[in-house]
Image (cartoon, rainbow, N blue to C red; front, side, top):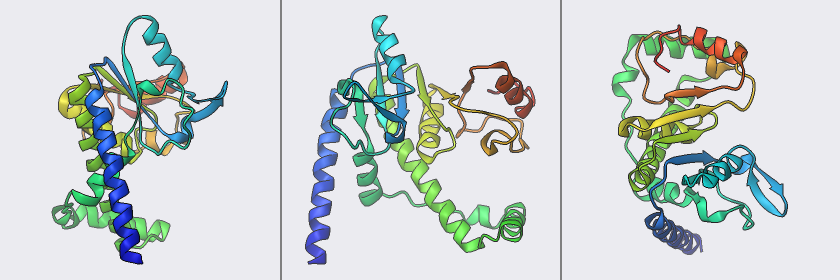
Length: 240
């Protein structure tokens, strides 16, 4: 019974992947790619509406500029607002993870003295077991690479000038940024809340004066307080 269920699950996964690839082939050139999750959606006039990006996409359409919204978490409703511009990429992720999982080798990093020191500090200060931390780190890196493969497929198909995301520090958006940086596409982290000394993703130390491939090219903020903090965080080095 278990084997039958597993077989049916894999068949269903392949079918979903086939439909996703068919949809991907229909995607046309677009100047803008946005990426979002089901948690970004609200019910609006009987439709599931992305509270951050749908209004921007509508604005672009009025100027005859094309864009797509790529979802990295499964859509839970059929009443998607303007579904013709929305692509659920989760089935592609599951297929790649299931049948073409990238191999992650951290041997060189694990042998680094500074990394070993970091692991010791994490275990001492936060009580996190080293082996558990390394296991989770490998999973995160694997997820990032899988999503970078997916976004590379999308970018090569659409040839966008810009790609936008929320929370650059998610595995999915890390993957988007990595693919964009490799292809020379400007990636943008759009502010949707407070960014300051209390937000861990915008306060860690920059030890190297060079651009990191997992980070966006642009941090879009809405007010001067956040801009001033980000300038300070980036040491005013004009890399972002």
